[in-house]
Image (tube, rainbow, N blue to C red; front, side, top):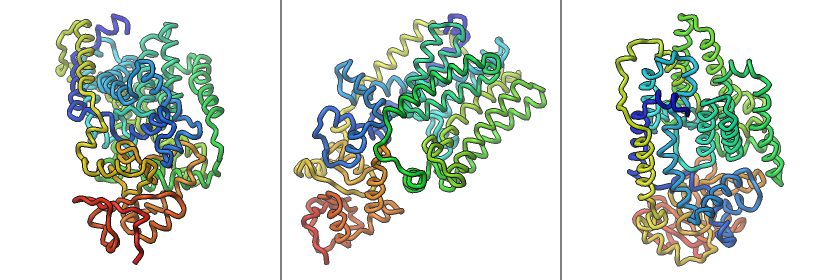
Length: 526
């Protein structure tokens, strides 16, 4: 940002946000976490073509080009450039995001609200921006402001999160100066990266940006047409051309597998997930009310320009849920199912923050809450470097960490044939068997990114988990596992100790206080 603009920013708030974010991360410093690890087998297969040759998910994400390859090869390129392991690259990227994403969110809100606030009021409202970012960093708070499990703030090195991070960064740079060719070019590059890495999240970031700049669009509509052409149409066309699946499902088949059976909590309105104990409708209503309060205030104050902005944001919020319902349940659309309009609700929290900051800027009581410890820019950047270096010191060996907790399991699995395929109840083992113990899993937590593998994924899922997940798995008898093994390769099955009664008469090849492992070839049917 220009020096004049930076001088208005409360650097104390930024250091506190970044420091707190780092502190929380250091309490469990790792990048081995779900869903970030769903690309690990892609990286392993890149470096070793024989890696888990019988693992369904690994084959699904590596054998046919798909959009997630862009993110995958980005990580591989970074690792290759610095000559480091892919996990080290991911860990360092996470540290960067942990340290800087709160700051990016702060600047993103600031860059929008400054258009609607008298300049001498900017220093006072920053306490609201600070608190809003600090609060949403708490997963419980972020969960309250989420619908269908789409949280407004979530730091992991996934395609979705990296896309959101770059998109917000692009917004900040774009808002610094609309007239600087260099900054405009940099912003366009970041928007493009955001869209390429995750087309849907990148698209929603751009829609969010355009909504908050509606008045600018009206004045310079020709610029925005070219902007949308470059940042959306071109990358979407390229992705569509390069990553067309070999097997194309019908709308009914696609929605049935992708929405109803695999991601109902994300995309099916009647089954939307919630991060709180209450139904998602409570979070939906809360956010709607929090958008309506500023609208009433601005109406009373006759702030026409802000009223229009407020109405646009409320409309986009409502339509994102309405469209999800209409084009899934009433007029099924494969294209809309792929986009998943409800994902846009993850921006609702930031809409609320922007509207409330603008509203509070008109209330003088906020003046008494301002705090600013004068910090030089040099000291500020030095502290950020220290934050990053401190984070990198805690680089973990994720495989050894899990091995240490499950030494006996690790020892047993290492004695099995490298081409063995395991089946397990849903939990840590479905993630750890392929990523830690280097053995194939019949079906795990990951959903294939290529449409060509949807049908096989669904068949495998129904065989092991049916419609009730672990409840179904625990009901499978030895003869059923033997029948499954006739259709797909399956060598070992993992059963929870308390649900192993129906395997009486069979001797496990491994047993501890929690699980029993049986070899398919040794199973006897009573």
